[in-house]
Image (cartoon, rainbow, N blue to C red; front, side):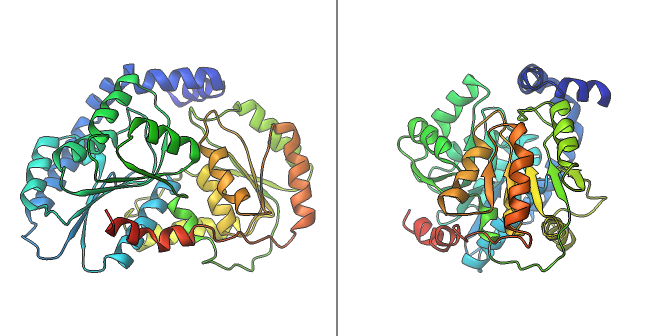
Length: 379
């Protein structure tokens, strides 16, 4: 399917949602078949690296679901999680396991991990919207839960919205059986789903890990214009035509730039310092705008890290709006959720008048992550 057809499908939210559902069910077998050769290469590299491990006296942290795709939000989560682990467990060796590499040869990988894993080792799961019954990360979610019953498992803040009844039941049986699991839910809706689905697990409500960067940056850039950061996937609520109309309306107020939080990294190693510098560069670019308008959750978070007011657009699920509630509950004056697109220009104009130099966000996540190690050590 060429890009023009894809864009035409994506331009209608209802059709986009149906297409997404078909893609995640009927198309999943075909997609895995197409991707398998590259996944197998990743699996061989993973297996080779695991086979080089030695018996260790210090603990290891087995980090599953490490993202190898180009989404800025997921990459930011990875870097912040790694930094938190390094700061709190400085003697631990972190073993990173991407899901695509794991899924192309699960038995082999599990067999090697069983050879080296110790009872005190931690198993960590990548944060994000990774629990839908069909996500690539679901395979390691389930197998880690069933294959390593004696190890502590920590799901960093996760959003839940199931696209598969079968996948949901598989999760219930596997993940729900591992009682030594700390499940950090990224929003109240996901927390309630997790408590209902996994009654034996310790489920806690935690903000997205990237919000822990709020208060750690200070910018003094000149601010000009509005940045419209809109998604291009099945989670979008508004059509491309509606977003185009919004951009036109905003252009009557000031210059409007457009982007998304999925970018091309031009061959940069996603685990490198250059990649992290690139993420910081995006955050700084947000500090050069008067207002951000976005339906991306990490677009929202980047804006508030940068001290830039943000108007949040609704999506077709709870993730972004529920995520915005963390900010509003903390008394953040620089964020508002738009009920519809028609009111967005007025909200933007109001922010530009009230906060011409930006407005800082409360560092509400600090207490959560400062105390997380104590929660883990009590498991």
